[in-house]
Image (cartoon, rainbow, N blue to C red):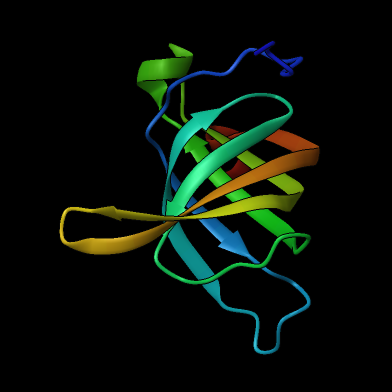
Length: 112
């Protein structure tokens, strides 16, 4: 099987907040990333998501990774795959999403 990814993936476990903007009311779902790249991410959540759903994604790259200050990443994306996963006595969904656009904001800039 050949690798189809065009961007390098990084195994990162980070908290992620995801919103599906077309749902009313718009609720923020909390999850954890498993891996991240400039083109997509895979994360775990405990609430259902549908393939094709548009996403607003927010995650924080901590200072330990950036070697400076915390960096916020705000992204727009789309769900491409949802997998049922069982772990730690909790059912979770694994969600693969593509990133269509992202903005990087240093957290110290947001305090000014």
